[in-house]
Length: 94
Image 1 (cartoon, rainbow, N blue to C red):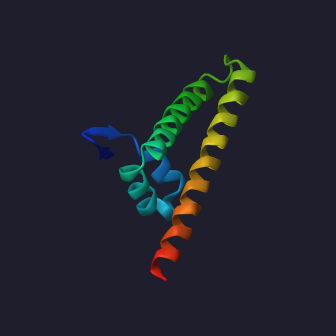
Image 2 (image 1 turned 45 degrees about the horizontal axis):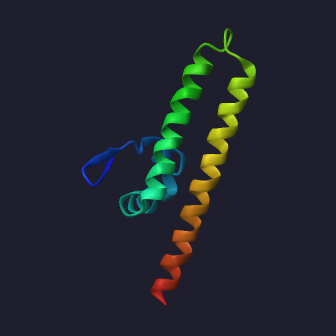
């Protein structure tokens, strides 16, 4: 779990999903409140989706679909932020 301003950040889901960029994502989380928010939202959405999937036979299928969509959209935003940071790192080296 990363930490920023004394507040722990649940970074495990982002690190798992973006394992090839976990170090860069950790730097982003440490330096960007917006990125930390994305990580926290992602962790909450994934946890909720897992809970819904565990009770899938009783689950509200539209709600499952909604949370799958939320997780996917957050992952797209996180991937975009990581891609921008990678470009910035490359440009900084020049």
